[in-house]
Length: 449
Image (tube, rainbow, N blue to C red):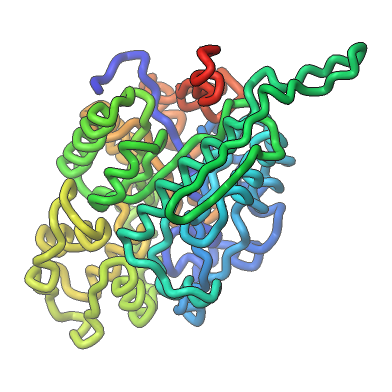
């Protein structure tokens, strides 16, 4: 878990369509009129690829944000968007969110395996259980409780991995002379029967160029961290301070070891939303411009959604009492991770309601930093070298300019310091992240791997 002079940070671009600041769509630097166009996402992905980012990432939810009147809340299906990006890029990784609560394992395994083939092995799956209560009615069901969702997620993920392994690496023979396309003995039914699913298999898509898509996870609650320790290869995190980042990093890596896995094969990427200016003062002024465009009614709804806190009865200039979040828990012990993040913010800064909404406006609990390129690079370097991160989930507050400022001004500094790659050494997402190709489960069981 230590650092070395040869260790390089991973950089992932989190594409939130209009930008990560909740008022980005109102600012002239953003382009909300393009967020339903393929060329917009292709442009952003190519810019990240030109800077040798590991991957682009799309979040998702199978329900409409109830605050649609205040924000650009519509979302294209991220797996479909990845196919458009795959056609316009050649190296950058492609990570999409898909719910284990509102999908079926076979369909999801097939979709991700298909895009992994079409992209040459660049795909990752961000596994979520979906916390939004509003999703259930879209599928004619009652939204499950957290315990049930995580039980289903484990069963779901095990089945998806088994389906991805249902073709052994050498199952395709392509024996033109003998007339044998594939060896049927190397293509396996999985015959998975559990509490939530019964899936026969095999998948009708062969094993993919990187073995299987990379497994990504973003939950930091007790249940989320336990799930991540067992399954995740990349973890997106949200901590506000270096100390909290170090505690989370150490706790997760230790849990990974306890689960019998190699901690070097689990990459922890905290989110950071950077406002970048030529000077710290210029960057802070830019952040203020965006904050002045926020709509408090929307911020209050967001706060209630991510932290379960209704502050609508308070005056905007009234200080928020830490007692309102007394049950927030700690970064390594909580039942709702974003509530814990907000609780820590309130305890540390004692903000007014307005100030708290502004602190959350650009990152929904992720760290927001306003400063010069040197300051942003200093922040990333400190977390990376001091045991709080293996890299970062970069969350520009607006697009496309927020990304351009990072790639053109921060990335060169990181390279000069030897902290980030000059270019790609491989072609798959696993190669970018330094992750091994997983052994095929059926080959291992047969003593062939």
